Length: 77
Image 1 (cartoon, rainbow, N blue to C red):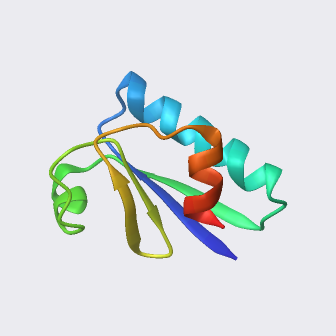
Image 2 (image 1 turned 120 degrees about the vertical axis):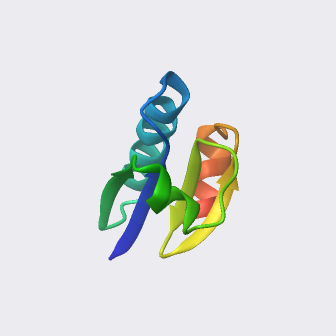
């Protein structure tokens, strides 16, 4: 089971990244959990300076942008 986390304060880009990540996981047929991390102190523990950020199984895959659906599939596969 993949653990996908979206780090961000709830902005439009954060919502877009959450949607893209969910679409990518479904397209790949993955079993996953999706968690939105909105607390700034929790986000800081990942060492992320720019949001939104995508974290897969505890590893920051991208920060500060919303990748395309195809890019996101590669990041979470």
